[in-house]
Length: 557
Image (cartoon, rainbow, N blue to C red; front, side, top):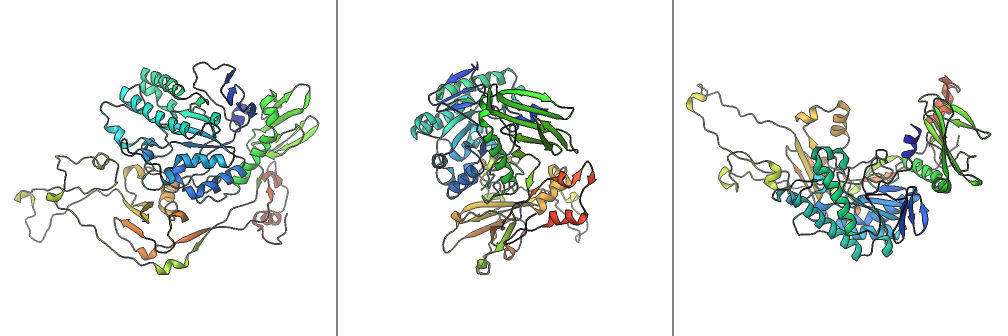
């Protein structure tokens, strides 16, 4: 249990090499069972994911600067195949698909890169990153020991490895890339492929190393790796998978707008600081685990004979009751279900339950130009049965009909009735019932697809969802959409809204996102007010502690 908690703080690398020796040397990058060694120095890596297609190039410098401020030293990203090659042998690297510019900007901020090549990426991304045309390759079977798939996978990997080499983006070339990843989360599906799954994984590892061995390759197989991303961003256009909102993981330390989300950002920054202070002991010390009682344990990293190299993690696994432990002559108070970090084995610099009462207020202000919006209305002409270009006995599935280029198509048919099937009375008309499984609205700004709104949630799948999830879909997640300033023109801007069931565009407003002022920090620990289920302070004081507001000249508790 104790090791399981610490693994969340210190991720482990599982390398794809067939036999892992204690030490393997690359030019400028090496590793052993303890850590990566970069330019001869052991490094403690704090990785945060930022996906370049989910943001805009103009935002990249600010995002990287804030990530670095938060203690991140490695930026992790996937390569998004269907963004770069939407049509076979036709490539796209402009705008937020400019992966080279993205990686070079990371380097300019003094950060390293963990590049997840894939090509399957999951990431709540359309088709897991695979382009549509790959489905039409004869006899192909994705992510299996299948010749057509392996041919195109190797072609894709070779192409991007060559781009990285030519741009000198690997660490041995003076660039930022210190790690590469092949495949992604394959353990959850490998068994379904049986022996071909095993053969495919072995082939993928060997293929990857054959393309480039200047930095280590890894596979994603850490059950305790930190979930989610450091910055989620925005799913522009049709890139997200089914029922994934335009706003992608807005609860990250940096929100969709690239602003700090407190207290999460500060809390994570502080744990990074505490671990960095413990770096020497973590990377060179010997680990010792001691069980104090049923719920309290210590993990100590130290080097015998060197008092300066000692770091301790003291864990209280009791869910509701705090504890006080005497550790090497020092009384350490442990809130319930928490870990205290002592980088020198004497001083507590961080506890996981100590959260500062610093909160990012989310304010939206209406832009004055709302009154200048001039709307025009158009109705899409409905084609006739004879003018439709494709004729088929049964309806063609939409995804294959549009080849993933659109979510919309007109279907038309004709129905013949016998006179005996019609009502006998002329005043009674036949009724056609069409199943209605939801509608959608999509919005474009200056030609860029900025968001969609799904409503009329009537499909079977959504009806099975929990009521709270339905409420989020219906009332929260589709109210506002991020419009990066880089998409705006100085003068005229064109907004196009497509709505299936009608609506009033005059109710659409343009807002600016403002970060509320925060001028003080108040450490709050639940156990400061409650000790073994017995209140230790009056209701008046508790209310004051929770409701205090910080501002210029405000009193601090």
